[in-house]
Image (cartoon, rainbow, N blue to C red; front, side, top):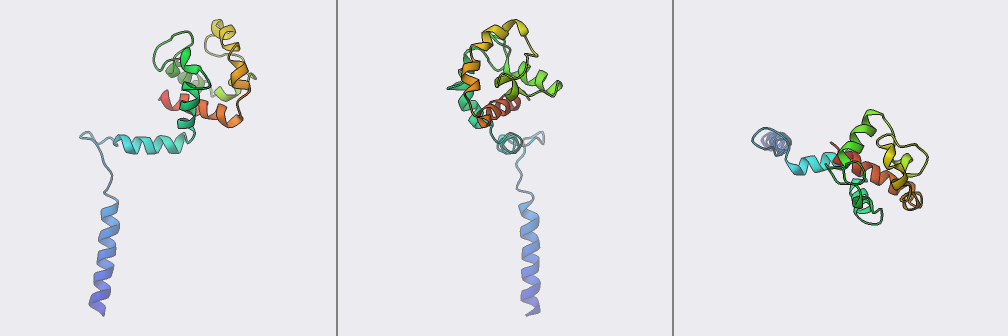
Length: 136
């Protein structure tokens, strides 16, 4: 009986220790994309929904690209400035804040407020999370 109990305890310890080593890393020790995706999903749980809105009904993709200025500033520039100023993209999209990036483009953006003001708070939060997640 003692031998069986010792064997079970040893097997349990080995199982617990081996499960912790199941993390996958690239040759430089960085987490693989699956781990990165999981970490981003925890930090930005609404980002996927935000991406759908950004590319779809929000029509944001028409004027904003990831890393280049088109009509409006790039997603990376938006994320950087909003993080630095600890400001809310969602509040801006609701029409309750003045522009903090490029006020010369504000008149163009005002046309889209009809779309963003009609969105739910969660949809605006989703857009914000998507932009912040892409701006890393």
